[in-house]
Amino acid sequence: MTHVLLKGLTLCYEGQHTPALEAADLDIEDGKLTALLGPSGCGKTTTMKLIAGLLKPTAGDIWFDGRSVLPISAEKRKTAMVFQKHLLFPYMTVGENVAFGLKMRGIDSRLRARMATEMLDMVKLPGMEDRKPNQLSGGQQQRVALARALVIQPDVLLLDEPLSALDAHLRDEMRDLILSIQRRLGITTVLVTHDQEEAVVLADRIAVMFDGRICQYDEPAVFYDRPSSIQIARFFGARNLLSAHISDGVAETRIGRFAVQRGIVQSGRGTLTIRPEAMVIGNSGANGISARVTARIYLGTQVRVRFEVDGESLEGLFPPDVMPQVEEGKSVDLMLPPKSIWVMPGEA
Ligand code: ATP
Image (cartoon, rainbow, N blue to C red; front, side, top):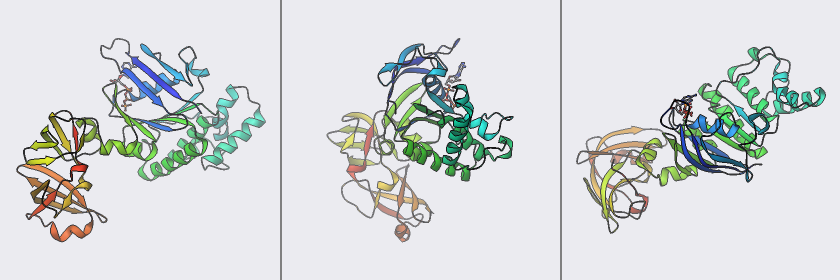
């Protein structure tokens, strides 16, 4: 297991004015799965390639277990990467593909074959050693790529969008497999993804990136409950964002005054947010407002309800038994519990 530390890591590609990665500090825990999450072009793959040693930073450092790895070449760094496209050698058998890294390291052929077989068992492809990659499905090929990465027992496993080329069913299967293998082996893993759900399901911690910067690094649940910015709240699906002026624990908004207990902003301008599932219907009084139902969508186990309050739209998620109370066009009492409101900097 390996503890990875990024310290002020910066990379400016040749001929570019703005860095693809700027002053990134990241403490990647030993044996855990950390996701780099963000939109296309935010610098995720660049970060990954720096950790692998495929790129040299313009500034900053990378430590594995308390020592800089910058002097160590990519081949010697003990990282293994799995890419979106699996890049298997088409002329080699599956067994040879998996054992390739071992051959490069001078491991003898019998041990190589045994280790490849063990890895193929682990990725649930027993007995596939003699097939060629083109005799496997896309999902199976991706599992071979994972086996090939794991067989060399890397210190750090780097997964670059490993699921995005797979269809929904195979993606779930591969996701479960990655999760179970990562937990079993306890290998320090960095996953690059633009899919927020994938990051939440797989990662112990998520580093959210925008424009070459790491903007928030936390456990998955924190991004829903305490996002550090409007941009992050939106990325995690926040719908209810209200510009506000905060003072003495009260947020003044266009649709009313709300008691607030939590947030980054204690006074002055900010934006409050509340998760749809935290709204309460039929509970007037403090933090209560009258809201007109504009739509209700029955989702089986929940009902999504859209409201309009003085020209602002809000959205709530409720248990199905709320259905009779939320007819379209009707007004209902809606309560925003103070403990569920979170106040962020900036204006929505
Ligand atoms: P995606 O999800 O689309 O793969 P990403 O978050 O992984 O995106 P990077 O591939 O790290 O983003 O790219 C970050 C920025 O650096 C982008 O603006 C990209 O255009 C730029 N970039 C990437 N590789 C190079 C390169 N070799 N030369 C110049 N600019 C590059």
